[in-house]
Image (tube, rainbow, N blue to C red; front, side, top):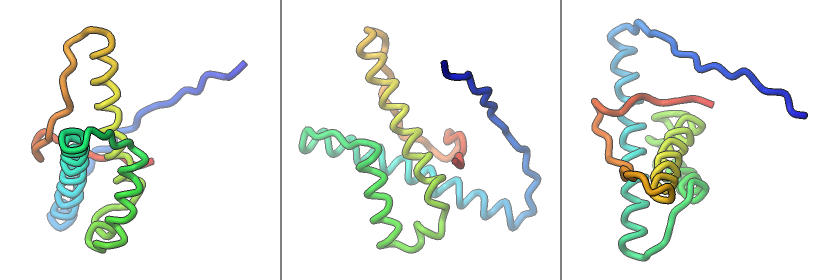
Length: 122
């Protein structure tokens, strides 16, 4: 029998210096732009070619993006960017689950910086 794991979410309150606040804002902006770009990629792939893009496909694309554009590699670490892609994947999974259940689906939306909740680390 598997033993139930007791997982907890930990949230830290930061009190950054002005220089650190600018860096954190830039980090948040890069995650928001990644989320919106990944959402746009999924929408355009479906509308233009009728193909679905998975989380794994987008992670491969992220690897290529980080290789070709060093500013994306410097913006944030790869695991936190993968967690942003995972968040989008979970939004799509919930969307399709609600469609299957006959509920109001609520398609994943583009996020403005003010409505982007934050970023995660593995």
